Amino acid sequence: MTTLSSSHGALSDRKGRIAVRSRLRPASLVWLALAAVLLVLVLAPISQLVIVSFTHPDTGAFTFQNYVEAYGRPRHVAALVNSLKMGAGTVALALLFAVPIAWACARTDMPCRAFARLAMLGAFITPPYLGAVGWILLAGPNAGWINRLWHGLTGATEPIVNIFSFWGLVLVMASSTFFLIFVFATTAFEMINSEMEDAANILGAGTLKTAVKITFPLVMPAILGGALLTFLISIALFGVPALISIPARYPVVVMQLAEFFGYPLQVEVAAAYSIPLLLITVALLGLQRLILARRAYWAVSGKGGERRLVRLGYWRWPMLAYVLIVAAITLVLPLSVLILAAFSKVWTAGLAPGNLTLRNFTYVLFEHSTSRRALAASIGLGAIAATAGVLLALGVAYVVQRRLLPGAGALAFLCLAPFVIPGIVLAIGFYAAYALPPLALYGTYTLLALALITRFLPIAFSASAAGIRSIHPEMEDAVLILGGGRLTAVANVVAPLLKRTLAGAWLLIFVPAAQELSTAVFLVGPTTRVVSVVLLDMSEEGRMELLAALGAVLLVIIVAVVALGLRMMGRDFMLRREL
Image 1 (spheres, rainbow, N blue to C red):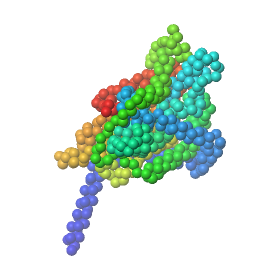
Image 2: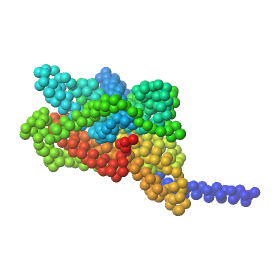
Image 3: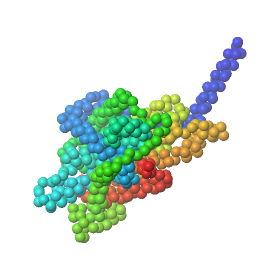
Image 4: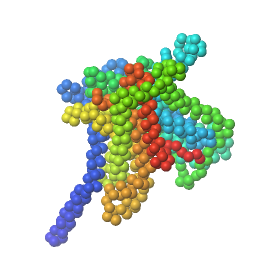
């Protein structure tokens, strides 16, 4: 009996030593390191944000005074209410822009569908603040080209349009964010087979009634998801309100937060003021889940039904006209006037003789050292954020999908958490956690890179997780049987199979990261600048021609990178071949 007990104890000790050694393998240490990185990037800033919001700025004691200061003044509360109104208006207009075009591109025989998708992609690539500048040049109440033309034709003294208004703010914001709803809705429309629509047609429903009663309800989850994301982005964008809401005298949350970051610096009050944005986000997510839980949605059956285009007949041309109008409002008009201003000595003179020049480009590219450094920094930070985000997300997604560590679900939550955190709130969290001593990273590109990686990490993680789920583990098991490790399997099997997915995720991160303003404006220092911040400085100085030139250079670089990426991918991540 004693011998058996001793043998059993020895066996248990051996298993324990084997378990410890397995945890100390290089691959296991890498997985643990990835988990630690997530704690640094996501958990620490948000935790510090909450802690700082309850910390007295002088004594460090627990206090509610920061919340009293943040919401004890009517104008602070009014800014929050105004942001919610603006977000609601933006979502309504973005839905009006995106959903009909998504349906037309994915489900109908409307002509020029490839052009429509290209126009939507152009709206995504164009930085929101450049769109705002274009509309200021077009519809400014005094010098805007539309109003000047109206005054010249009619002799009227009052402007016909005024971009410095609530609806002007909503128009520019919706033009900058409706692409998200378009992508969500297009993907959902393309997954619907024609069986249910055919049944409705057999029972006497026309094209319009079938779309309203059958097709659109089936894509409602995707539309709600896109609408929620659009709302969250719109209330957190900084550039558009900075250019439009201040002249419009329509205070919003982001501008109030910028005031807290002025002199004197009130980080604790800013943290307290930003917490309700997180609560609003959580409430909206809960509302979305409640709405979807009350009704079941099935868009795809297991039978792989046929997907046929809806024949619009005569209505093909009105639908195309609608697409052209939306493309003109969101892309063509503001971009055209911006490019013209970039080549003008004085933007208000337009195409007048002798007004065209290349001087603006010469200045920002060769004479203005801040612009050159900002361009290099923006492109570099975009590439770093995209590359690091994809690598980190791939590793974490592999750990989560193959359950290589206990608590894998918690890692997935940390990767997706930045999705529901407004960028401006995340920036304040990073400031509270890492900007001050002992790390003292304020004003460094390191802090800005960490914040950008964190903000766009959910994009890469979602793509990586979906791709890994589609790969059967047997392929990785073959590597393990042949003596390779998990890292070898990821590098030689998983990553090559997901190269298109990862390339698409890289582009989807690079584009917004290279033009990011909402995060950068709170984290850059006197010696660190990115293009978005330099453009904001130029707008405050009234140097619209130089602003347009520098913005055009950034846009050309982004377009070139995207075009190169799409060429390497074989086909792009958003455009589709004609059905």
